[in-house]
Image (cartoon, rainbow, N blue to C red):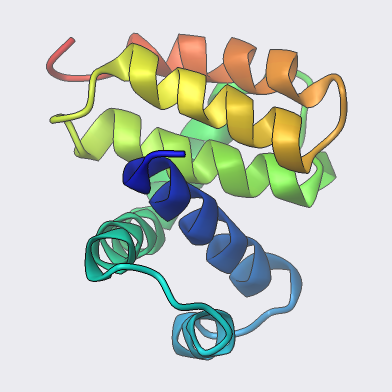
Length: 136
C-alpha cells in the first residue's frame, strides 16, 4: 500500500473520531498517532488532509448536502461521511492530485471501512463534486 493511501486512511480515521466521538482535532490526533508509528511523510500528508478538511468543513458540508440528493448529511453512515468530506477537500482544494485518483482512493476506503454499497454511494457523490473542481 502506498504512503498516500496510508495517509488518507489515517486522515479518514481521525476525521471520523472528531465527528463521531466529538473530540477536538488535537485530541483525536493525539489518540490516533500515539498508537501508531508511521513515516514522517505519511503523517505530514495526513495532517495536510485533516487540516484542510476541517478548515473547509462548512463549505464541504454545504456542498455534500446539495449534491447528495434525498440524503441529509447526518443520516449518512459516519464512515461514508468522513470519506466524502476528506475526498471532497482533496478534489476541490488539493488540486495536485488527479480527480480520478482521489475518487478511486475514496471508493477503496469505502469498500475497506464501510458497507458493501458504500463504494457506489461514494462514487456517485464524488463524481458530481468533481465537476465543481476548478482545474479539471
